[in-house]
Image (cartoon, rainbow, N blue to C red; front, side, top):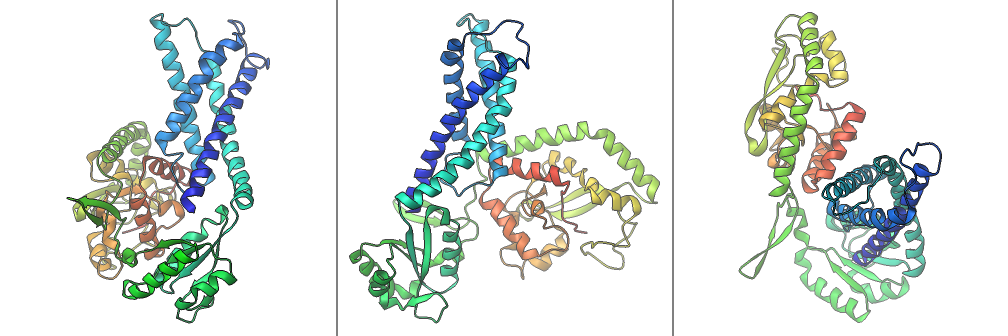
Length: 465
């Protein structure tokens, strides 16, 4: 059901991208050579040459790079900021790729065609607008078509516990696929209860059920078997949700041990080549950041020295990857011996221990810029769960569920929780959920999105002291 409609939607997206690239190419050709806004000192090239050489290259590089980025993977609808960033990067990669391709082969006289550099520069914003617009329009068109052509899938959920609630919440995100949750089948009193577990035939006929999701505990094995047998006789699509999902720490993954299927309970995507790519990005951006921001860092150092007595830098022990301790650096923003009376606590708005210069630095997270050195050293990453102090980790590890899973990846200067406003003295459990989501769904694109949102919001960290 869902997988089939996801594939249909991906096919629509692919068709929409082809149309958008075709239109963007012609719009760019007209803007560059016929609009009169840009000079054409070498004259206007033949339209036929651009169609034969440039347009096929645009299709090839665009679509291959989209596939590499995961643009056509079977995922839920991305938000528009995700699409904009992904499409912009794709358009830049495509234009640079075409420039290098034609320049290389022309230099060796394999071809005598030369593509206009200004054409490619204009193409980037034009293609971005066309592709993003096409994706939005394609999604809206598909949702209308899907409801009319495929009909509405009327879903019944067998179960009443936490697992059933979780299934209902996940399915609710697919309403744009024409999925309607009709109610539940359970022996427990519940608002959306349509009947007991033995009432499936009656409920299915009365409510025109098309799909049954079974979310029962394993102790209800006999009921599960009976529901599956009845659903098969009623021609319902059946999905069985295993009740061990609540035991999964991070993400479940199927493995095989000499033909025996095993389920990994804490699989994460940040492994192998992804780990190498993330580290290379950390090295490059932290080095460039320290180099380009060196005048700002010098100014901040002088401001701290001028603002209050005491050292310029503040070094604090934090817990990082696999629970290892490291020294995290920042500009001092509090008075000397700020924790002598309070001990390790989070700083709150209006904290009297914060200096005047420190308050200004904290407003824009400038005191955290020194952590670029931690990133360069390998203690931290640019993006990841924020590191905590050992005293707080010891306090939380026995009382906050899944708290220690944050240490399966490197801690970061900024994270998924921080760009969603979860900083300082906010809900710890909610922050943990956002951190777990990041670990479960890591990708280079997600890191780029978090960095972009951080720059827009000027929010690096939660306030932990």
